[in-house]
Image (cartoon, rainbow, N blue to C red):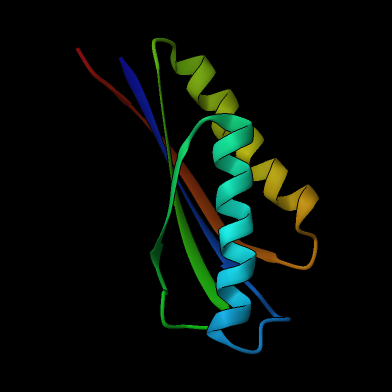
Length: 97
């Protein structure tokens, strides 16, 4: 079993309130879950209205598949949310027994 963990830190320059931010983040989370079958949650910066950090997890038998899915997730956010800036992202694959 292989598990991939990705962290994406986003800057939301157009967000004027936590309500604006929640609308955008909920949309991203919903679309990622349905399109890529990954687990997604906002893991940091919940009280900052122009920053968000998403944690994404994927489990598979093959580490190549995990790597591909996480790369596609990052590209999806870049392509479908051009108004957002990806400040940083990192991914790690954990190998289990």
